[in-house]
Image 1 (cartoon, rainbow, N blue to C red):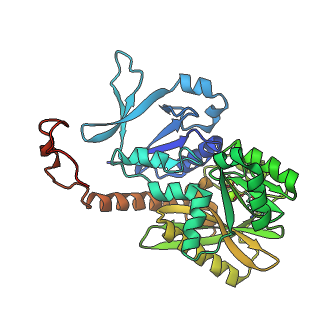
Image 2: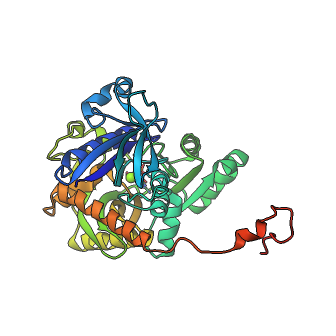
Image 3: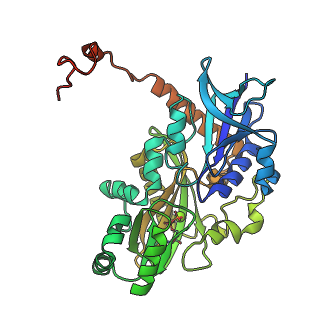
Length: 402
Ligand SMILES: Nc1ncnc2c1ncn2[C@@H]1O[C@H](COP(=O)(O)OP(=O)(O)O)[C@@H](O)[C@H]1O
Ligand SMILES: [Mg+2]
């Protein structure tokens, strides 16, 4: 029997649209002999829809129309299966729309990629592809991610992190601490967004105030770090799990402005946004050099740091790790991780001769392996602690001694 694979995409995130493209590209490349694929679209207000047209990129021009011809569903455990339940069942319809064996989250950004969707799926004991709850959550928070790397001697650009509370109470104090510890030029980032949204470089105090105000409109925590003005950006993908992992070829995205913008990432390579079933053109390849123009030593160093970062975070599946090289000093820093990379970083693996369907299979098999291992662990502990509450909370017997 074929494996029922539910592909989840969309969600309440600034990268909603990008995720639709990544997911539908992946679906088009999945092995239909092995998998019965059920595309599940999550709207920007977190409703899930299935239907004939949900896997068709052409139908996303008019989302209202798409939803009106689709079926709203939710997940529930029923008859030992994880089922997609119809939310608005009609008289003649079965309440169960379908069921799924494995979930493949292809979502980007806060509110979905950050462990939220993974936690939701985990509650159903459903095997799901990719990073687990913790690695997804840590990977999304640029500050916590850097703290973890720093603690494991992986080079990062030191940063300061400020909360909205601090900002409202003492903007001058924040500015002073930045000027004293980092100095200009600095780069200001919302702590948990992606696609360069809300990020600005500031070269003086007025620009810094503006950049901080702007970043706080997107997040409750904001990170400030030294801006590397003569930088080269290099990305490397890793596939595997805690036991074994492999690093891909390195790529070099090229920016048209001071920072790699949303436009560079998705639009300037506009033609490349089109879904191609052979995945000839990868969506996140705005303007790219592949392989990156770096020395063999630098390439080896980046691949090694990529694998170390993957392991330290406890990743599973495919991730992409982005680096910044300071060309004035030749120092290399891990900048961020994408735990569900655009087009699942296939272009970086294609360079090593891998087929997209095999790449996807590998991710699915790693998810099954993790689920098997989790099933073998003990998650319950028999105790008679509840027996002490036979008379409710009033008696003295049931007091929790700590
Ligand atoms: N310290 C830095 N110095 C200079 N440019 C930077 C620095 N950090 C990030 N950038 C630029 O900003 C872009 C977006 O920052 P990044 O941390 O990758 O956030 P996002 O999650 O939005 O991709 C990078 O691709 C790079 O062009
Ligand atoms: Mg980035």
